[in-house]
Image 1 (cartoon, rainbow, N blue to C red):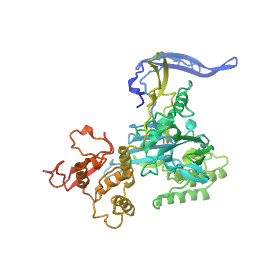
Image 2: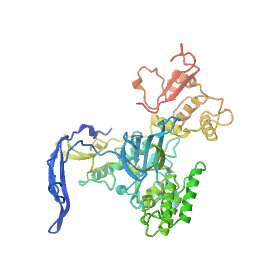
Image 3: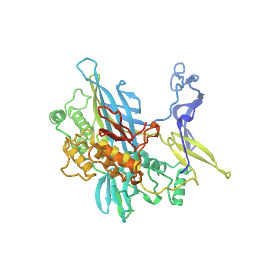
Image 4: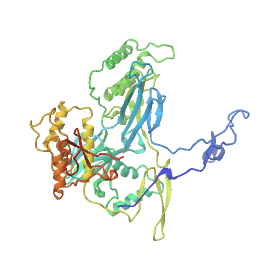
Length: 575
């Protein structure tokens, strides 16, 4: 494996901070100019500066004193607008009068999400009672690609096609915008060809996309440091013929990576691919008719058509103008992006000299191509609050980095700048692994995908029956030989997951986990799996299967005598 050194920010301590105060006035000196500096001082935590007098104020009163309360590293934050207020909140922080908390936030290039938990009003008839509400807001833009002159919309992680000889599957592995703008002209799209699996997936998992992120972000074209260290490192890896990236599952040769900027095209694994930009806005399908939404639209239309130019005061915006802005905001909040853009155009025509600014989303190409919901409403202290997700902020390399001096055995040395959560691979320490995704990882990923699919689906729903049919087909009973209500299927589910992962496994009929457990125990050489007694909980790993008796009494049952009424589950996470 490649030796690597992780930058752990908790290992560093800031002793003091240098602070400068500027007048805000620009001085000209010959052909150059500079900002006038009034004072500079070094402070330790808890210390106060001397008084600094400001020349733009009265000298008796115009002074300030600076105290260094604390020093915090730049953190990853979610950028939200709450009604008209903009806030940035880190994971674990509270907002909205401590009623809401950021549970999780993730950014994979243009793909971004934030998970929020709020204590809303309600829950019972008692005054002051609350109820918990958890929701996820996402920005998942779609990208237009032309593949052999066939135009289609794709998201990051989507499977695109197989290469010419059918040995690799090409995925859209990552995408970002240079400078983290919202313009499609700065779009950069990355592709990867992965060794084909027995059951190639239609989409990469979030975990896999995250691992590609670690590679791509390290070598982004718009983030090369002044000395060109990362650029030189990338050229070194290309010269060696491979990248030292393990991705937790596979090692991929350099030839498997390709990237295209907006408007560029080239042949990738046998097909001509061109990046056309973000897809146009579309309206999401509303699950059911929303009476409140329809009533609000009708009210806005009444104001727009009947009271278009009327004002509350001479300096107030017209009722029609305000109503159209609110109509735009509402359409965007519930995912009607195409309708929102049409309303934005209508606003520009109706009000060429507006007194209210258009929402920024009207000109945000990334947000307009978002295929997910990025707004939610909550009731806090008897007030409806609109929480809109604007994106994730991550500290830049310049804001968060450390410089390391590396001494090599032959006497040479080199400095390396490493950003937050980054890793540096030493030259000469690169090794190449071959093969595809490990079976353990496939088991876990497949189980996670099934968990996500079910969500609130019931076994006998039409969707639930479709899922069950897939499971029963894994053991050769995909027709009408099972019943969604009366036939237990947990053993069949595990068999399905194993078959997807390409595991040599004794498939189980129904819920009798005893069947496959006994076969593996008694014939260990015939299968990819092995059975063990759980003698040490620390030995349990993701991808393992844990089994337990679940009858009225479990006395007398054990490893050598598994119960009929047993149950097994796949471990997908170990804390």
